[in-house]
Image (cartoon, rainbow, N blue to C red; front, side, top):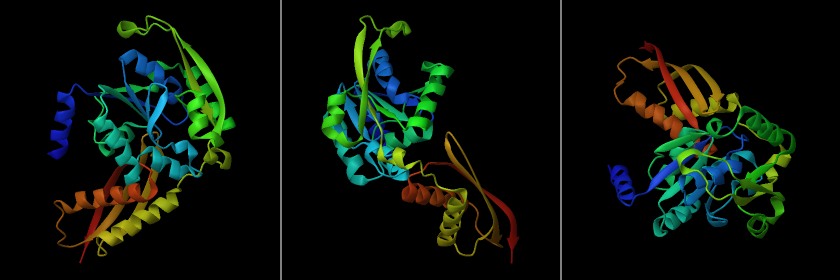
Length: 288
């Protein structure tokens, strides 16, 4: 109820939230200013930073983290001090439209919740604004060279994050984008960075480690539940977990199963920073 009231307050101020979604390395940050220009967006949230125009106004960059999982946590505003800082700036700054950038719809919804703004009312997929060839080229550059883009000028990055600065690129926007087309071509500068975690190589959580965490969560929740099988798979939206269980006879299912699902999701996301898209619990049998 409180979340609904807050959303209504934002909407009464004329606030609209947009999201740009695509897999890691597909060129979202590179095209962020293009999207902002088209829809008249004031602010951009990208990898832990709050950006207004050509300036970083709050937050910290996930690109400065030394490890991949730490970078994911920063991008998701996992730390309270980080998200509170950005949320305070959002609350005291005059703005109407904001763009959240993330790898999935669940990620941008979670960012919105943590920054206390409404869920996105319009979600733009990277495939809607970039060709397959452009996306493949961006992905290849990320894999081979470990280069990332931050949608602010080089001088801003050199001042805030000099150790990871690599290069800058200037983009001359003159595309026809429909009703909200750019009438006057504009030059934007973007910064190319090479984060510490990209130099060291990407560190992903293994299915085995995730399975062990699931087992630990279930044991903490109710040690009378027996686990028969845990399977994990991942896609561009996040991780999907299926757990086959044996429950004691007489177990109250209503509410308990949902609570267990949420307990697993909340704990894994809190301690790892990764996104769990779904947890399916399969009751195989009841035991005496």
